[in-house]
Length: 132
Image (tube, rainbow, N blue to C red):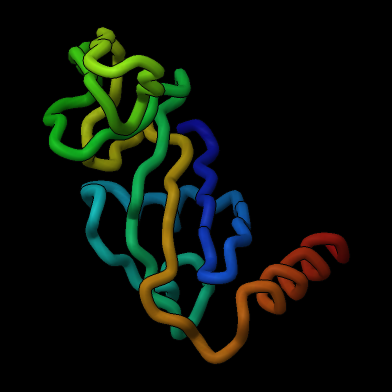
């Protein structure tokens, strides 16, 4: 299994990235975009996180409303396409909305804050990993 990374967007506009273990990644499998997950799964006690997207091992973005692993769809606007002119469509490949083993990055947003701010938690975790 490829390594899974999570990107957590905080309310102050900063993003924190963390690599997670295989056991922690298994708790994300089967979740859809828009579902909540407890922060205890990734050692963020007191936090509740919302799944907002991600990308697979080839870099294709996840898109809400797509069933299956990967599809080529005509996109007018939204995730996976930057339309510059009005009415321009394009055919793009996107991933489904369910987190599977092929997903290597999961984007999360904080929906409920914990006791400690994320900046303190990530400084502590970085210090522990440097000691090892």
